[in-house]
Image (tube, rainbow, N blue to C red; front, side):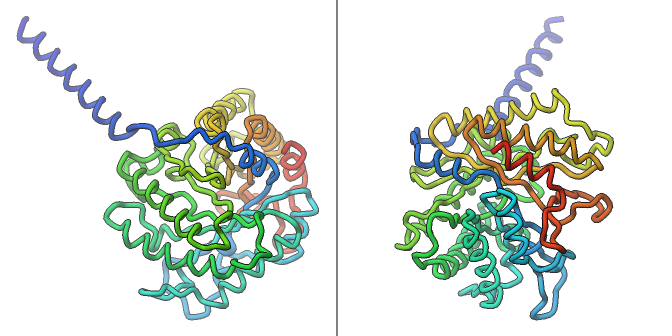
Length: 382
């Protein structure tokens, strides 16, 4: 009997040690979050209002080799971004556009990693259109984590080298004084170690540390340019996640013009294709979402650190009225917690127009708003 008790005690102690070690590895210590009391940052995020991502255009990529001069902007079946589309977004009342860009296919190799001037000029053209409509514009790197961006200590130096060369070029293209505070730089999309165990769980202490160091280096690159010393910069948590470990472990630089970027796709059953019959935005869903936003407020906004929800949305399941209800609740609640939001639009808005993830509310072909009730819900509650 005594032997059995000893064995049980040993097993329980072993389990406790394993749980403790995993907790340290997974959660770790809190990241450094200065109490900024950044009224300027809070006011700036509020002024950004609501907005939208224009995805499936500049962020297209291919894992297969394409011929020189291949038009990646239309690679996924969307037309070129038109000035009419930009005007329609502005006229609908949206104030911010996030322009995801995949640069890898339009960059040369080491040591300069020179961006194709035709590609850079086209990106600049659309940025200029957005600013001409007096909207805010967020410029980033989007799917480069499939190529040169690797958030792993083993490849950290290589990632930093390419990131430095790329953003040096971007900074020079947009160094004119005409690019005021409405142009915002974001270093990457959802920085994470691909295919790792904690990829979508907020990361672990080692990979979060890589993102922290690269965030810091990115800020130094931008601030090294006289024309960008006051540039607003958007820095994501690990994977831009709102999960507790990612927010808890994120370190925020002491810089009055840094905004934290989070992506929130919750409640997952309603907003994704995982549950095709989950088409109604319920009170329970609202409760889940409110807790998510409250946690982000407590972790950052309450400490004076501004937050932008850079991506949110819900796929079309022939339930646009419920999607509009969801959007209204999301934006209104986020606004109450001091945050602004950008809808994820990937160009496909009709059910069946793409196999999965039909998030769109814009009609790219006609350059108009495809689902006005959702856009109105976003704008009216921001």
